[in-house]
Length: 327
Image 1 (cartoon, rainbow, N blue to C red):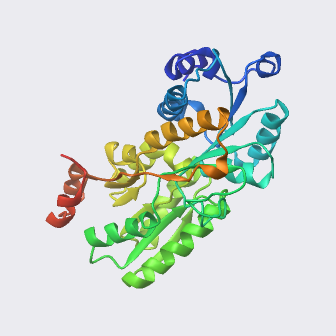
Image 2 (cartoon, rainbow, N blue to C red):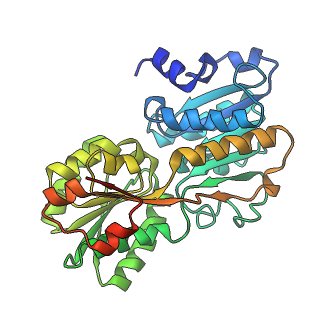
């Protein structure tokens, strides 16, 4: 996507790629928007965040300046980007995606932080509790505590004869990868399943991962909540189709692109809520007084076309619980 196209999609030049001197020269309050991904893959989420910010009366370029920083999938760049935004300085830091908020938290900055992420912020020790986050950080999570294990349970319900399942994690994001491995291993033990953990830190690893699934005789694949995989939903869905691998992702777009199932919160909605929190903090609210919000709607999407192509019969009980069935 060209830069001009991204500007139009998110609704204004100020929301485009950052210009180094713009915030320093402006007298408007500055918000830092930090993501571990790339702008072309997150257009609908950025738009939703700006919508939420607008609901509090702020518009980029009018009464606030938003400085975007993108790590482009290189998580090791995040600490430097955090430091760059703090030096501007920013009044609030919107740390979107798990790796971005982990980098912001690790920097031990005094700037208020509003996060948007899929993982459990309490388990990752980002906040003291959902009701009372404490300190200078709050935000929105797209998951309730039961969503992670539930994804493996759904795959087991669909594939009761399968004894080996695989979990795909990103080794470049070790905190989230290790947390998910621990949770999934416990769920696999309860379900009587063998769990194989596979690593993919870049697109170049995907072919190897799917080849490994055959060698390991894995009958199903669950894709972790890492934002890198969220940004690669269409590619992963295509590979799952080509290898006839039943797979489940957090992202609805995965199922829409031909993956078997998706189960997770509404990502765009969570970004809108984070935009609202960002505006409220700019108006004077303290992060410690704003409880972490959770997605109120967890959606199950089943691609019945893909199931039929794989020769799978989806149980009526599972179809009955689906929020959407793609036929």
